[in-house]
Length: 366
Image 1 (cartoon, rainbow, N blue to C red):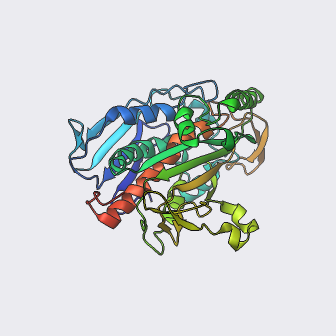
Image 2 (cartoon, helix red, strand yellow):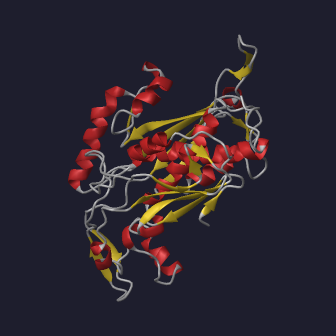
Image 3 (spheres, helix red, strand yellow):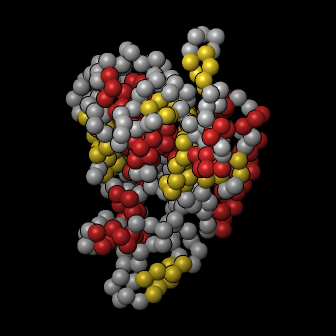
């Protein structure tokens, strides 16, 4: 399906090499003040062609809002917003349409849609589709921010290079990460990460990494058990992002190596009289509900599938093995551009849950 959400419904439109990519949002509360410059800034963080660590495809991704916002306020009608695809070269995809690229959805899409799929740049399976998530997510973030809910994300690890969380203030570094092209929170690893990504680009290869996201300011008890728990809804959304291969909350897979007495987050009352936990191994979620601590999750991204090294494939017409060196403009590492996608995708989920729990009354959210 192309739509996500129950109350805040996000429908992605367009395709990688079509006329545009964007979103239709139904269920946006009316009368909300929206700063469109913030949406444009998020799109800038996500857009291709922004530095030497991204693809050379140069899309400006200029925001066009057709309906849903008037005089910087939401109108309550379906919100339609998109960007034009302008820097397109589909000629290469016509050449290789019968030779599916390893690591891409070309082959299963060819079979599923009986050869009628849009094979140009991956069509609907392209990371270009995340433009709509960024637009919808930023609108959600602006609405939730008024209730004290904040989203921050950064590149936690790229090509096995990770920073030290012990030597910097994480919240400040989250903000700092927006200012560097690889979106890391530790300034000491900016150059090593850039060097790693550029070396992969020069070799015609790629590298993966991990994005961490934190959500603060959630009221206790947010979430809808059983199948609409915070984890299940976030995981559903995050796994819709192309190239995602894993997600973990709190201590994640490390929990399997801990004892119960170690993993349990013990409670205490802070000086303001608020119940908190001494640790956050649960990642801010217990029983699928928020427990008042920051919701923390990490997302694993595979290396970009499009590499120019020689690979084997099969010609679907002749059914003969073939060799392929992918040409075109591709990211040597998708992680830096995925950072704004992750936190905006999460914002869509949280607004949907807030509206489910409170409907249109957001005043009760702490």
